[in-house]
Image (cartoon, rainbow, N blue to C red; front, side):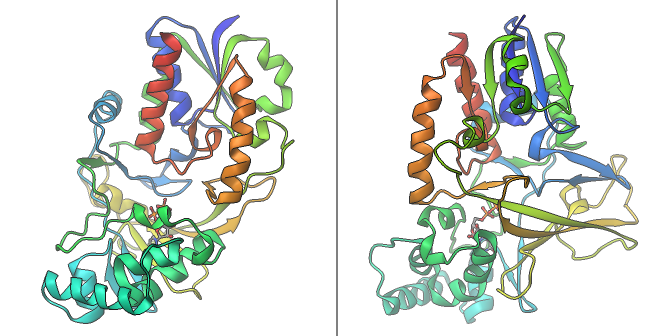
Length: 373
Ligand code: UDP
């Protein structure tokens, strides 16, 4: 018997494992995939750390979390500043003075604010009730039409009117010339990739790891090996979907190794029109400034086109769809989960929340501390 079985070797599972092991508990981490690190997994191709399950840029305002991850990795100075491509017109993201200048020719913050206010008033929005109204009230109709509407509909497979307003509030709006996508004190990419960072978290004599095994397929066996379980998979799958399926968005990646040094000149380019079938293209080498670990320029490049789709059984779930219907269903599942005294359920899938990495880590640290008390 061991103290804790951890189902899922992503960030929530790895942090719990480390916290338990650091306090003398025995831990077994299992994952159905053949690798650790969950969706932050990176794989080295031609010297480039490729983010296999989509781009991950670490950013946080939480000093405790920042100190924690810095125990396991050195972070570089990467600052996320995606470019939006609308039918060949390029705009700076997030929405800032560069964006407003290109869109309207305005030069001062006062002119930009006046333009947004004029468009917000014309749309007659006082209290935004959904993503469309929230977007227009933040940045006006022109930016909504060119940089938000098409992208969001591709990303979520739903009309902006049917989506919750909070999703668009993830993006800053600034009346300054600042292309930093995040309002975070700390930001960067772990040198050597995320897989290495998670490997370091799990590198402890108290932690064993077993890959390529599916907990849900052999629950009885796994439940018998430990006193307590941390489950980080989808909460609805844990309960055999007995109250119904929660909806997720899935993502498909088309990866290409190109024999050229520079494809798009930036880590992320978002295709914000409705017609281009992919949402964005990631060029992975720019997360590490186009250099290998010895500081040499890399001659080739790897790009990933991202296609968003509705999740169906067998697909990888990526984004919870936190609209009212799904949130209500999640609350019912949560009531069931709270009755499972042997099981802690956490992470993006276990809590059905659009968590960023730092929030997952903060939640895992808190949950582990509560458990160890
Ligand atoms: N978004 C948009 N245009 C963009 C980038 C983002 O309309 O060029 C919207 C879209 O609805 C998206 C949301 O902002 O779902 C949040 O974007 P974020 O970059 O945080 O999404 P993630 O990186 O988690 O996929």
